[in-house]
Length: 143
Image (cartoon, rainbow, N blue to C red):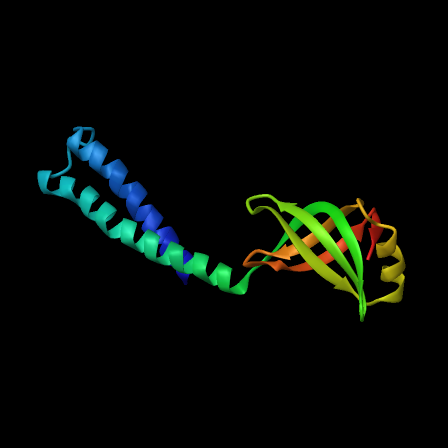
């Protein structure tokens, strides 16, 4: 529903702009003079609808979050009681670069992690919380 209302708001803004230029620029000579004001009215109604429902859609995406692809390198490997800690430096388009940590408890992954310092990393990151990551590959080997 938000998407439909957002499209309607955009159509009102676009149509109102076109009609305003046509009516006031006398490109629509057969149109009644009172109809020239329909364009600005459509624009005035369209912008708030576009903003309100577009912003609501953005909030829903933020609340739900979505997985985005990120790449980077392993900056460090450390041992903890329950496994191995990987310190990563990741970069994602539109989200910049940041450092984060992930913990590994699987035995096979521990062996890979211990020899992976400086290795390239591919991961999925939640768009609304960059600390929530899912490592896909380290050094070209799938996790």
